[in-house]
Image (cartoon, rainbow, N blue to C red; front, side, top):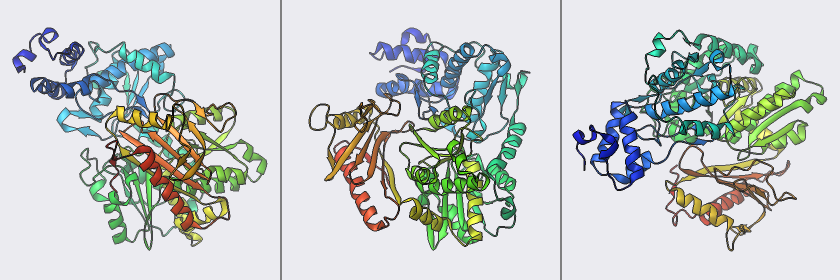
Length: 589
């Protein structure tokens, strides 16, 4: 045990946990951290002798997953806090300075949302200000938004897409080489005093709302539509931006859920601030819609880059990400064909989806003559592929990932819940003039292009060695280097393992998708047409599983398709993940 007096003394030689590496990290933290709340958290753990918790917090660092550097807020080098954001920004500066000799004339855009952790004194706004301070002290112009904004408002790299390899690895190396805070990195007040700081809010908001015209096709119908919409921003940033997007499309503003329209970092009205969880977290929105006689509910997640949709059709139907993608893909194609009547123009038109998402766009592409491509999971891959295709004169009109991430057009190179909300509203208004609901149109799409029935869920696992053991077992199932041949009695035709770069369906046995050693992902294609994928989440301690039955057009025995998919999904979880044996946490629905 150590007293506060001890800890406030010479920290470089006082701490002795019996682990010299941990002792050094504790000393560094206490020496470098100037946030009283997070410094006190580490000191308390030292005083209480909680060595394992100190190791968890201090002995690893944040890494790039499917969407940037991510972790919970709190004290420690493995979490998001003032010190780790300063360290990350210092590394980013060093890397940008190497890549761009004109960095001091280009500048950097910094945005933030409404998330915070009170006990750490940590808010998104404060982290944004510290990020700006690091850049400003190196004479880099900073475009710091004056209020919270949706994630799609912020540009990630010079091409507008999230960074991907090799930038991520090289930035991490630069972070490791610049861990000690520079003298001026903590000068948060530079945001007020530096002439190099400006606020891009008004310009970016205006440009964004003008750009929405590229995905608005029937404004004259929108202005007279009798449909009413309810919108929840899930205590995040989306409220005012979705209101403005609706007005840009000619709609009156949607009815906001009053309890959820203002920022609340505690997300006090929902058990989980993720609209992807479905009806259980949409309760307030659905009840308000019933009172207001609104047929459609739209919900953006806290940073407004994802969108959930529910429709009243007798009971409430909450669309999955794959179902919404079928609707949005059809809608974008329908309007493309209206303005591009020459079939030859389809040669330069593309739609994209991540490989764990529904193959419904592939079915549309095969029948309609445009191009469809898959990417690795994560919108960073989609954004960068859009950039590459656009440079060669191609046009990407729709992209998605199954976790309710959609991009209509290519106005930003990231998933965008704000524009998607307005596009869904216009699609619903148009269909309403034809006496067709969203759900009815979804069935029409399936009847035309083939039923695509999917199931997506996850199990929790807080123990990385267990995850590694599960996937290792799949690669060495009954003997070394042999994958499973069946699951639940169903025969497996092909296996693709993106982690190792193996694909049994290819002549050279090599995966067409890039190998991704940093995450686990294995896909099983069954002889009956079902495709199933197991993968680790790039942002949370989860193993996700995805299954889909892709039926050809004309096959419409839905109950049999669903029953077979249910059996394969259950067997996939029980036989390959073995939740009880591996102490996995099943998703509570």
